Length: 444
Image 1 (cartoon, rainbow, N blue to C red):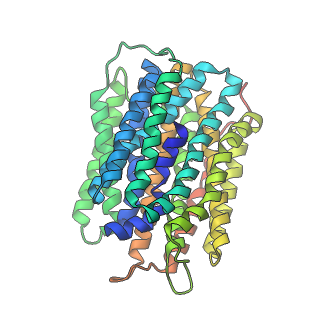
Image 2: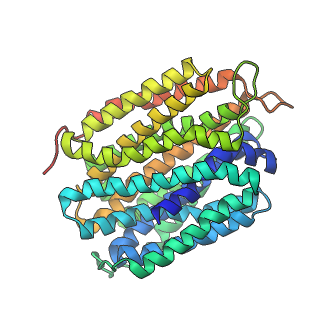
Image 3: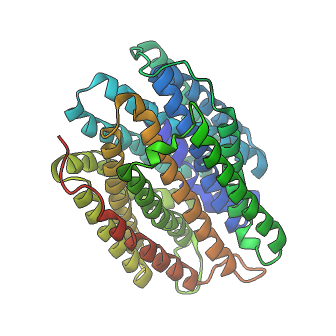
């Protein structure tokens, strides 16, 4: 299931330039398409974690993946951008599958093996992304963009049926006394939807400053109201008391900052492969871009188990510090040198490896630092931070390219790419100051 879901999630990334041309999208709309799945995941993930803790991981997982299959079908049949966005919204339910898998791991493995196993599960999800990256371009170019969604959706549906039949049921570990926190859920939904609108309109801020300002105010109102409601709720969607724990709060901040820097590179690198500028860009097609991104997917797959092993042996601080330095250096190198394909391939692979090491170390540390009944909710906080970091960074990359594209042209200035890589490096380097507060050793 992790492999098939990862494949379905990753088909958009290497084909964004192709989709922009076929659907007549701007680069900002392309960036929005690349993050809308993650925005939905930020809403679904804490709910999935809480319901999994309460009702059992397998039970919730199967129902969640049924929604993903419906979303993949909508994306496959989409005739235009709005319908495709709807399909991506439904597919966002797959992000909630990760905390559910962590619940299953905690219920079936001893603590010493859980860290490595969680890294393996994360690595398998990313490994599916390799399949999606490799297949999306050839399928879209030889068949159509519709089939690049349809094929992994069929695999998701088949895997869901197998999991439902073969996976042992895990007993619920939480109580079923408190009802669903509907006010908190509505406020969180409003906050995330408003955030998505703010990110979508940010590149057009000059023409619609009033609308953007009103949305920012509305976003602040939703955020304040949500925090206030969650503090009083008997069974909150996300318990603020978990965020009050220094280790979890630090892990969330680090995840957001690191993923913000990563996502700018994740968006800019495929665009630079496709770019047809004077003296920069390579004019690559969707199939070529998929192959160019493959080493990064391999590195991200290896980062899962490596991050879990590193956290167990050396502690979170050492793993995260190493990853942040590696990522910062890679981003600076991309800003300085990007005239050959291998420059981008190697840089993207190092960034993917570093990001995977950091996020996995923080995920495993968080999953094993809380009580078993809080595993789903605690890990979902890290995933939400990851999603929000990716959303903000991806949209910022799209805004940079849109602002640097002259009217009537579809070629962004090279300076926009340089600015994006440098900005991402600066943001990522700030994580070093936060990482100093992580535990230095390993908790037995």
